[in-house]
Image 1 (cartoon, rainbow, N blue to C red):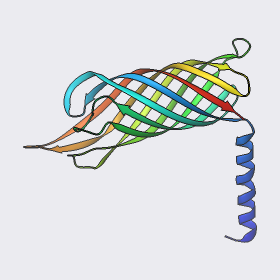
Image 2 (tube, one colour):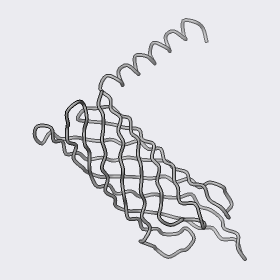
Image 3 (tube, one colour):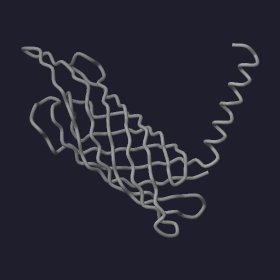
Image 4 (tube, rainbow, N blue to C red):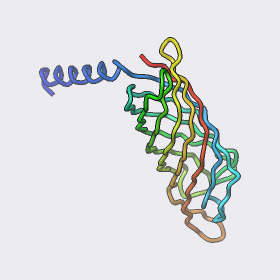
Amino acid sequence: MHFKQKNILFGVTLLGCTSLMASSYVGLDLSHSQNSISGGVTSEIRTSNNSVALKYAYGKDGNRKYQGCITYYHYSDPLFDDSNKDLYDMSFDFIQEFDAQHNIYPYLKIGLGLGTMPIDNASKSNITSLSFNAGFGISFKLPEHFYLVTGFEYLGRSWQDIKYTTTSEKTLSTYTYGLGLYVGVNYGF
């Protein structure tokens, strides 16, 4: 790449980052959800698996928001083996806010994610998942650029097929879905 092309690329990147930083926010959410599981170590539908999640988000502020998220999920029971309960997920959400009254903003959100979980005793050491989420909530503007957010979210997840080797080899498809409640704080800058 020539010097002039590098300078143009650097300028466009800097302009894009400056534009994104102009009205951006970071946030931290804590959520709890009740999940139903179809597949995993059994073909029966189970509804007793809870998950707790910690989400870090960075996004563009305004009435129409978008955010990139990194989320850590911890399930109360393993989904695929005897010990692994942790899922690491990267997602993208689109949020539409509505101006209800001074400093109160109801919103709708929709998003997609891609996750990975370590597993044992299967054909792979990690299993990937594709997720879809939709929800609604309320954002409360607090002093000094802070926002308190709370809401409900539906999360559906389709897991990669895996093969288990026992007395015979079998392949299982797994889906999880659940409804969760979350609360968090955002800081706008």
